[in-house]
Image (cartoon, rainbow, N blue to C red; front, side, top):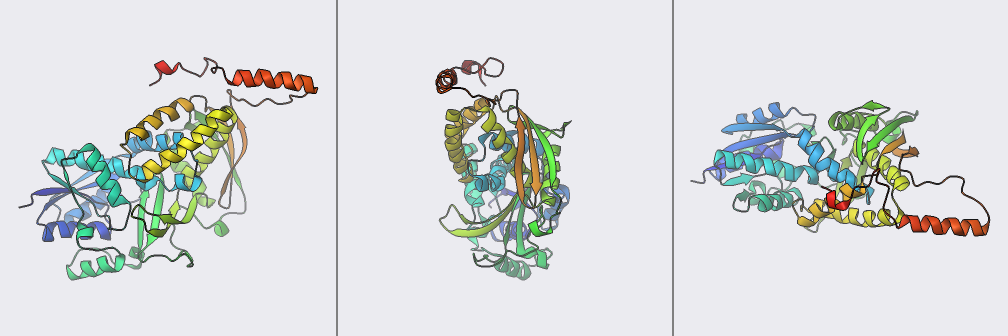
Length: 399
C-alpha cells in the first residue's frame, strides 16, 4: 500500500486530474495543500473542491506575508537587469515557498511522498523536484500527470470525462492561469503559435493598451533601503502596496509581457505574463539606483542580477550562490532611499522624476578646463572612498 501523499492543489483541471490519478491509479490516500499567495480565487473554497474530488483532508495556508518578505523583496533588491525576465519570475518565486510548506505538512502528517499537478513539459515540475531535493532529500516526489503522459488540456479533459472527475469544463478552462500577488502567467490549452494573435480574453490583471484610458496617471513611490514604503506619501505595508500598484498598473495596461520562452527542458513555448506592480516597482527602483549608486556598483550589480534571475528561474532557490548574492544585494540597497515619480500611460511605466538624500548627482558643475580637470580628480578619488557613515555600514557588521 503506497500510504499517504500531500498534493499541492490549485483547484484547476490539472490538480483535479492529478488527485484522481493519485487515488485511483496509485492507491494513495491524498492530503491536499492550497496556498494563499494573493490570488483572486479564495484558497479555502478551492481547498474544499479537493474534498469533493476525494481528498482525505485539506490544508490551507496564508503565505502572503512570507511571499512578500522572503521572496518578492529579494527579487526587487536583485533588480531588473533583464526587465522582461524580472516580470516573469512570479511562478519561479512562488514554487520553493509552496514546496517548503508541502514538505512541512508531509512531515507533520507522517507522509513519505509529496506530489504536484505540473505537466511533463513545464518548468514547475523541475522547480518542485529541485526544491524538494534541497530541503527534504529523503521524501519521494510523485508526478502523476507526467506518469499518465498528460500534457495538454484536451488530454486532461478527456481523462476527466472518462473517469467522472468533478470539474467545470467550460470555455474558460482552455486557459491555464497561475496567479500570485506578484504576477500571473497565462497559456492556452493548445500551444499558441508565434504567428498567432494572443486571445483577447487571455488577460487577468491588465487591460489592452488600446483599451486603456487616454489620460496618463502619475504617482510618487517612496523607498527606504530598496524597500517600497509609500504611494503618494501614504505609508503602506508591502502587500497592500503591491495590490494598489496592480490595480493602478492594470488599468493602464502596464506589466504585460508576451514572449517566446526557452523552457528548462529545451523546448520553446509562447507565454503571456502580467505583472503590473512588479513592472512599476522595478522601473522606479532602477531610476533611484541610477541616482545613488556609483558607476562601478551599478555595472556589477546588473551583471549579478542576471545571474540571480537565471538561478531562480531554473529552480535553484536554495542554491548557495543565490543566498550569497542576496547578501550582496542587501548591502548594495542600503542607499536606495528616496522618491520616484512614475508616469503610467498605455502600457508604459516611466520614471519622470527622482530625488534622494544620498544622490550622487552634481548640478551646475562648470568652469575652465583646469577647474574641470581638478574637479574630475577630486570626484574620481572620492568615488574610491567609502560612503559616509550616514548610510554605509561596516561590512563586518552587515547581516
